[in-house]
Amino acid sequence: MKKIFLILSILFLFGCSSKDKEVVLITNININKDSLEYYEKVNLYDLINIENGIIIDDDYQIDTKELGEKEISIKYKDSNNDISTYKFNISINDTTPPIIFASNKYSVEKNDKKFNLIDKVVCGDNYDREMKCEIEGTYDINKLGEYPVKIKATDTHGNTTYKDTIVVVKDKIVSSNPTYYYLKDFIDKYKTKDTTIGIDVSSWQGSIDWNKVKSSGVDATMIRIGYGSRNTSTYDKRFKENLKNAKNAGIKVGLYYYSYAKDINEAINQAKWIINELNGEKLDLPIAFDWEDWSDFMNYKINFNDLNDIANSFMKEIEKNGYKAMNYGSARYMEQVWDTPNYPTWLAYYTDNNDFEEEYIMWQVSSTGKVDGINGYVDLDIIKNTIFK
Image (cartoon, rainbow, N blue to C red; front, side):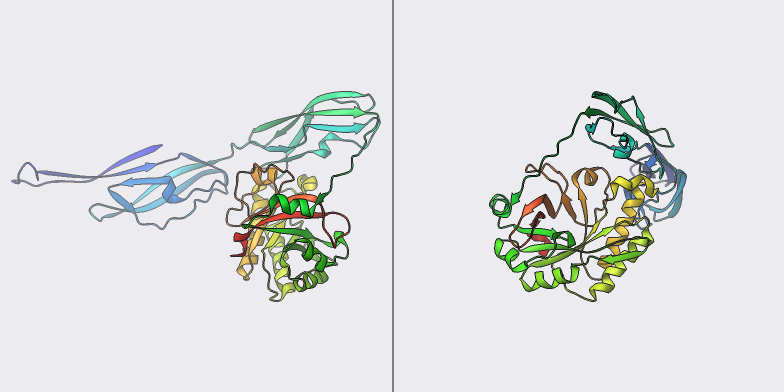
């Protein structure tokens, strides 16, 4: 912490009483931090405390998007109403370690030559756009057994993260069938006066009987409008029929867009495509930004801050055109990557015991729901009614 004491004026009044003989006006400027983290969100007024004076510059967010020394200049007015300028330097650093997304255990069949552990993990960073991700230790896919190894991620500023995992080589891996979550059981467990039961659908659900869906107890749905990358957006082939038939059945409707955007411009163009295609169509729920191409994240050559800029740009464009927006993501990515505080969260978390501590407006509880009117599985959602206000 820096403390700067500026003696602005000392006034001696000759011949006055001892009580009035000396008036000392001191402006005390405290700088709360010498350094900030790359992309850290700090406002000017949070950085500075001033006594016996006021800052006359408008408050603003400090630009922390470039590493190195940054000069900050403020204008302030002291108790004599004199205006002065004070300058100081803040260091912008990267001390945040990379993040590794990996399971605690990986099972592989013996002699599976296609298995490569490094292809199963995601290493990412707040600053680096290309990560050094490596395995420490060895495993032998030709020999049965359990092989403890470490995954190591290191960024260009020497910040390092380790993750322990085990490779288990088996004779055969037997897949288990998922358990259905029947809608009646779901409603009995989660429906309250403060929630609405919903589903989210795409062309994967095939032809849907929306009247049966409504009768079964579903009152809202998120429908995929499309997907896109490289500035090309493609309609979900059942979007228009789902939108029309869900509305006709009296079901509240929102949309989601599955994005592969690699930069801000691409995300904005995707949002503009949605706005153009909707052509004023009214919605009850937000339009969700759905980016989840984590298996290929390391090939995108972006960092986590880039990804958040992409998401925020998409949602800002959506809301600029009169629709509500929200961000979709699983719990672990919401906790460790996503930073979209200006927009509500649609949380994907497949658990009966939701310990997610951050705020969310929708909760995707299961991907194996069974609902009348839909063949196969469908995602089940709990929607907080405040979303409709």
